[in-house]
Amino acid sequence: MIDQLLQYDTELFILLNNLGSTTWDGLWLVITDKLTFIPLYAVLLFLLYKHYGLKSMLIFVVVIALMITFTDQITNVFKRGFMRSRPCGVDELEEQIRFIAVRCGKYGFFSGHSSNSMAAAVLTGLLLKPYYKNLIFVLLFWSAVVAYSRIYVGVHYPIDILCGMTFGAMSGFMFYKIAKYALKRFLPAEI
Image (cartoon, rainbow, N blue to C red; front, side):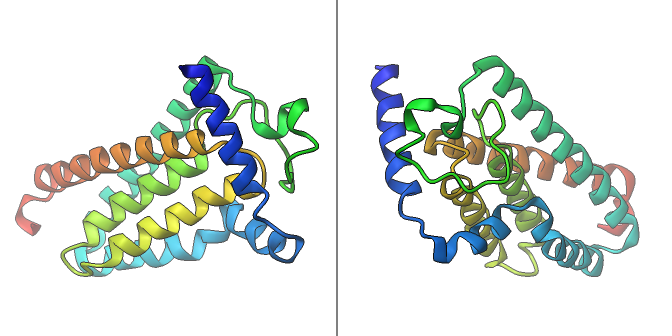
């Protein structure tokens, strides 16, 4: 059954990856670059500062740093534990896929880009929900676009993406709860 699921995953990857064209490659390489969204992160941090204040903002920065470290490290544990090759590293797929990423990497299960972007979307979306009720949906869409970019450039299978996004959503929610707890614990008068 697992073999059949992995076969379907490979077939879906080939289909989605081949939807790309050289016309759009540059855009998707920009989207998949980790540094592209620094301005978005800066705006989100500014909005947190604007609505919660400086002291709360310092707590959020610590929580965000811990969350990204957590998601990165757990992703690496899964990659080393499952040792599932990335599609760009499978010789049998070389002629069937479009590989346009800068590098391939060794293992791909599960996607760090997907988990980190989803964790950031859920955490900041929930923290800002009282002020911008639809922002979380925009951030979830952004995270899904970042996740798809990993298929487009040829470095992750759809299951890698789905599991990364699921783990990221759970992590983002967990760190949202941690942030809310920290605010009550360390800044009870300001809530």
